[in-house]
Length: 489
Ligand code: ADQ
Image 1 (cartoon, rainbow, N blue to C red):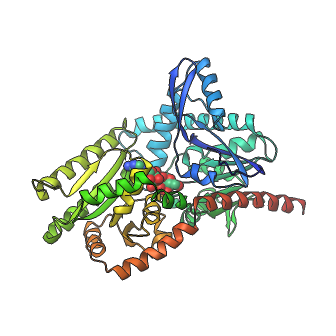
Image 2 (image 1 turned 135 degrees about the horizontal axis):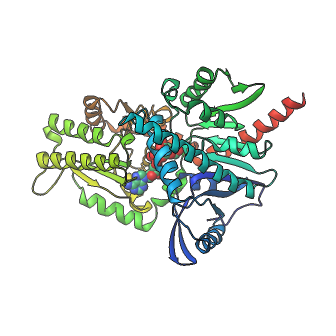
Image 3 (image 1 turned 180 degrees about the vertical axis):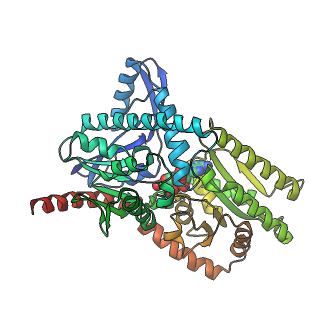
């Protein structure tokens, strides 16, 4: 996926994330097929020509045999990817356990698991041990491939221990860490049994980044209140050593979306959708099926809107596209059934022989289909209960330059801080408020829609993923230079 117009390489960047940006499928004993998943991070780094990125992460598959590991390593090398091999037990304890059952809900204000306190405590300890072990395995691979002058950029809550492991190897390594989720209030973080160890481990990095100023502030407060360290406007100071802490709001590759609207398959999709929903306003939800996305709350608000506004019942349709994730986790299975149950009830209540008010799809859409949907939508609903940023809101805005649809956006998504002036902001827990925002959006005069859209479109096209990556890496380089100068003085 190297850009054909890539300029000569200036600096090597080792991007370390739990998952590599590829899906690997085994075709034989020593053969693999790889598919690139063009997520936000890949697009962000593709656009940056100042450095050459290599990816280090788990390929998402268990490869117990040496032949398979060698073959996969070779295949991945062509994509500039380097695998970390994790066995099933580690994946279970580290990834499903500590990352997804403890840190993910806690960072989104859903608290720690509470079922059986004793059992939880015991499994908590083994999960934390597995978390540290997995982070050390990532560090081993980074260390093996590290060359002097490289920048190491660690991503997300899966790898909070990594900065410490890396600095233990080599205190001169330039290490940055970025969190894609919210960092919660220090009052939430302090409930975590391993609260101090995790904070110390992150503070080993030279630069620590968050999507918003609020998350950065929460992190600094956690360090001052829990660790008793000094918070400065620059970051956190520990025995004369400063860890820079700052906000780096992510963006999208907006050009990729805008260009896609011109291609034939997308135009065809757009035509089909327009015919299919002629005479009705289209409302859209696109989410991973996760508790934090507030999908039941969104659908209940839509029900309330239909209940209170009979006029709109046959004139509006809600398309909810929800990609299933973590399907083996009981809580997620429960969420899926809950959503299906609510959708079924509402369609039974307000549907007719020829039309239903909600189309709910439990699957992922390909890029072209997604762009076409964004383009034909009148109102997009993002009702996350908490969300680090939320890129769906950005993608919708990028695809709306002809339609100028309305974005209803949760005030608990990081994106509320950047797109708040153009969107209708809501408290997703307040179903009545969201229902009335739907009415406001559907009835909004063209002039106001245009004005709001302009604001958001301007933001989305000028605060891109490429700029985000460039900004983070250049700040990391500067931070290390400044620290060296301080030591010399
Ligand atoms: P996510 O929680 O995955 O990311 P989000 O930022 O909305 O949330 O990104 C989701 C991505 O998946 C978008 O690019 C979207 O297009 C795609 N997607 C979602 N549903 C889809 C579907 N049904 N079909 C196809 N594509 C779909 C985490 C944090 C966010 C933060 C990002 C980036 O939780 O808060 O914004 O990382 O830092």
